[in-house]
Each structure stands twice: as C-alpha cells, then as structure tokens.
Image (tube, rainbow over all chains, first blue to last red; front, top):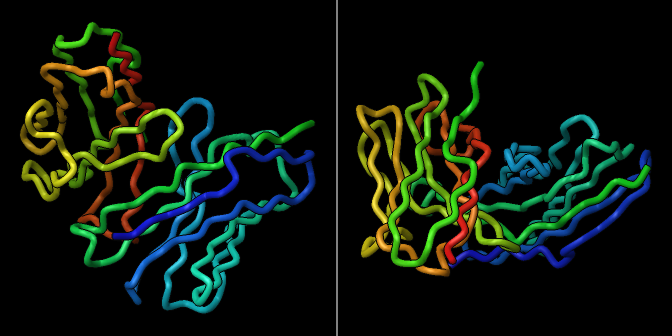
Length: 116
Length: 116
C-alpha cells in the first residue's frame, strides 16, 4: 500500500518570503504521479501542481515549484514570494495506474500561515 | 463556469439517525467522487462514479453508507445509521473525463457533519 507523509503539521512564513513544505511517500511502483493541493479556509480544494514520476524535470507553476527526488521518495513544494492568499492547508497526494481508477492517497496536510 | 455545488453546508444529527448529502457536479463532468475528510487528516475516497456507474467503492462502509448518481448528473450520499466516528467533512469532486492523473478534480465546498 502507498503512504504519504507530511511531517510538518504547521508552518508560518513572512509575506514575500519563501517557504518549503515537505512530503515523503512510500511505494514500490515505478510509474506514478504526485500532486500538491491547496485547501483555503473556505474548504474548496484546488490543484496547485502535478509531477509525473518519469519526468526528471521539476514542475513549476508561477510561484510554486517542486523538488522531486525520486530515489529519496521526496516531493517538496516551494512557494516563492509568499502572499496572504497562500494561507491554507496544503496536501500532498499520490496516485498510480494500478490504484483502481487512479485513486488519490493524501497526506495529513500542512497548515501554512502567511504573516503580514 | 459554475463550480461543484453541495448541500447542506452543515449538518448536526444524533447518533443512529440518518443523513443525506447532495452534490451537483460541474456541467458535463463525467466522473464524480465522494471523499470523507476527518479533522486533521487528508481526504479519503469513499466512492467514484463514471457517469451513473460505480467505478470504485472499495473504501465505502457499505453497511451504513450508500450513494447513487441519478442519470449521471447529481449524486446523493447517505449514512444510515450514523455513528460518532462519521463526524467529518464530506467533499464532492468532479472531473471532465475518465479518472486519471491529467483529469483535474474540481472540489465542492463540502458538508460538515457533526454526530452527537
């Protein structure tokens, strides 16, 4: 079974600074996909970024980028130039083709607070 | 484009009572998901529909939970009878095509259930 671990229950960052959220996962699969989701206090979860395991290049979406270390099974999210609107729960998630219809496995989340 | 709609937003019931949640996915989205998010944890998939057929219900406690998707559009999730451990936020999500890592899931605001 796949597991996703987020070891930082809470983090805070000053506005305009950079913060990195950690995620590790455990799997025996070679083909899989990793995601970061953001869940603001209003609770509507949105996709932030996606990484395919077969791609060596780290994914980037504007101020959000990942550091994907396949051998270490690590998938961290870096948020640059943090903004107040980045305050949210962040969930790391995993799926693979054999996971019965690409079922997502989520970590427990990291609560990020951006301080003005 | 209208998002995923859910109702009610909040529900408080006594244990052993019944409760039903409703979800209206984004128009045209073929795949619909119900997740359970217990406080302090990431979402856990309960059931996934492709149009009006069940694709994955392996984590649905079928002795008390049931779900249906009428005519491949709206969906209802029912709990009968409810237990204290069912207290959680129930999230509905939908995606345009077949489940997969490139078909982004769009989430609703959720229904917060409290069982007393």
